[in-house]
Image 1 (cartoon, rainbow, N blue to C red):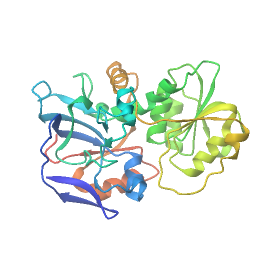
Image 2 (image 1 turned 30 degrees about the vertical axis):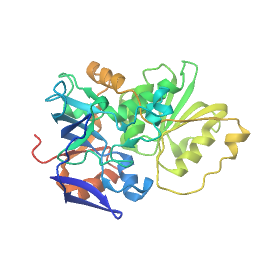
Image 3 (image 1 turned 90 degrees about the vertical axis):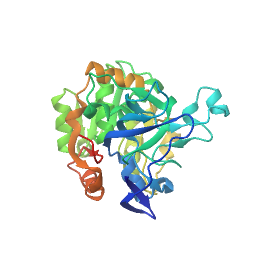
Length: 320
């Protein structure tokens, strides 16, 4: 079967054996896949990953327990031991022995078939299209912020970065009633938010320092993180969504001087994201810039990295 792999820092489409699901896991045939900013950073060397890429998918279970066979599913990406202190204390996403789909010590979903633990699966309602369902994982990551930080109407909140994840975060936070401003550089994505009635500002026009109660950094860059620190008011909160291979040093002095609370934010609640998609709270399909064959991975990744691209989807061989 075909799979998109990183080997020795190079991206290629390789022929690999179809995996056999171990006990407790299922074999999934993906029908649609999403290219994430993390995939692009892994290609630059982030995390030192080698193997099959990919963690955003919707697909059909082909082999595994009878109660899952034939079902259309999405899946959580952290694969855990269920025995360590993190797992037994309710923090399984931080399992001491976890592997992470297409990111840490586990081949990902950018292949014709892949495996995942059955406990990670979520069934997709018939009312949700594949094009919407493939956004479940990043949409869940956006909802994670609302579980970590209590946002009220009086709070002035900035989402810094209006790329793939930043847009989804802005969609989710716009429903909280907070004083939201999405801050970015890309006229295309800022215009999209403007059309949805979400207040926007361009980075080069924003001169108010230390003016936001909460700032979410979704820029994917060290420079963006520095800007985010600059925008948080004293004793405010900085939520970090950024993962990047850039080793640039960041001046952290203002975190101490201004007594800023830093919250790392990663994976989130799939069930809540699926409910939002079923209610059609957001038209996430508007973010799709291109749909390309998995076998054209180099071109697809180049397209995903372009400044005028929001989301690139991949179609595996044989998928409709």
